[in-house]
Amino acid sequence: MKLLRATKGNFQFHLGQREKQVFCEILELYPCIPPAHQPLSKNGKPPQRDANQRLLDEALAEQRADNQKQLSVFLSDPLRLVPVKKQSDGGFRLSLSPVEIEWLLQILNDIRVGSWIKLGSPEEPKLALNANTMAQLWAMEASGHFQMQLLAAVSGNDAPSFTL
Image (cartoon, rainbow, N blue to C red):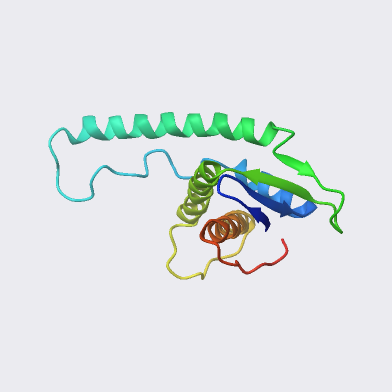
């Protein structure tokens, strides 16, 4: 993902053929954080803890459902990822508003953190490699790649690039 142009209300990126495919595959993994993973409090027992936890879980479920609907519309919009013929590999142009970037960062963070949780929240990257751990590592690293590119674009910094 390479930033092509940034204005106050719009960011345009170029994605190669493979990168577009990975971008869409990663976004389709949302949501990844388990539904009851976020406790209301880790310390003590606040009053009405169970009722408040249920309210939090319901609010998060509602937000995830809304995000999934928006993501479905986002990915099915033919004007979202427009084929580009001028670039050497063709590729696609992705236009995003600052609000959409913020939203995508939240989605990508859920995928990255959720993948890490599914790996057992390891502190050290010493995992037994198998089909499941490789899929989670791939999702974690690919979502981190897209987060880094979006954050660099918003901050005006150059992000390191590599080919997916």
